Length: 338
Image (tube, rainbow, N blue to C red; front, side):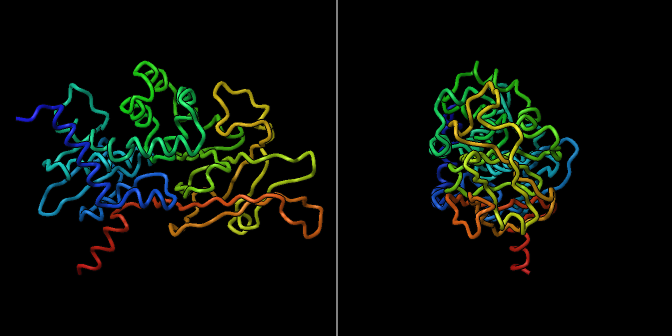
């Protein structure tokens, strides 16, 4: 009879097998920073549906046809982790189950611990977490700061709390550090990144972007907000702008407090004394295409006619759909089978 340790190891191994069969590393190599559990479920033939639920985070249905139910009213990182957890139930051969929480402890049943182990191994494998940390230039000490961990969670596509405990599982931080980090409230972390005049929609996130994001495909939702740290030569008359942004209804405006002058308890998310922070704002909630877009930022001297940009930065975004009902891949499969 298998021990719990053996069952958890089997769950981790199964997550690795799913990655290998799905070609997850190919997706990441193409520029994406996170795993897409909904697509993995769709590719495995598991139907995915999102809808408002009162108490449940999600459920796995092992009926004539396997399916996953997700709570559409939760933050997107929690939705991703819930989907991964339910997908664990599917791949590990579990029966129908409903989940009100997914942060299971050693006191919970083996089945839920297995699904949880699968979810963490799927969404935050060591190689992917290391890639994100390295790409942003963060060091071990930076992971002691809640704002850094929050930004890391956005790149991995999981909740702030899940990111904290993923770091414990990978032995990047201690349990005592994790408990201290967990005391930070995501809502306050988000608002601290925005000017006081900017409001934030329910469950929206705040991305801090800079030149180190240029090789990634950022996957925000239409309600998310953005601040961008850009090299500063304002004293020489240079400003950053983007015609593409204007055509989409966005604006790029300097934050009144210079990023290098802000007093913060955490290290700069992208360090350096030559950056200013800009607010990238637009029509919050406007439906965006999921096909992706590239935003080209340019540094010019506005009063110089036909001025050639002195610097450019391309940011690639693919807005994640937040639709209710069947997922796009599930709908398309239903159409093909009719």
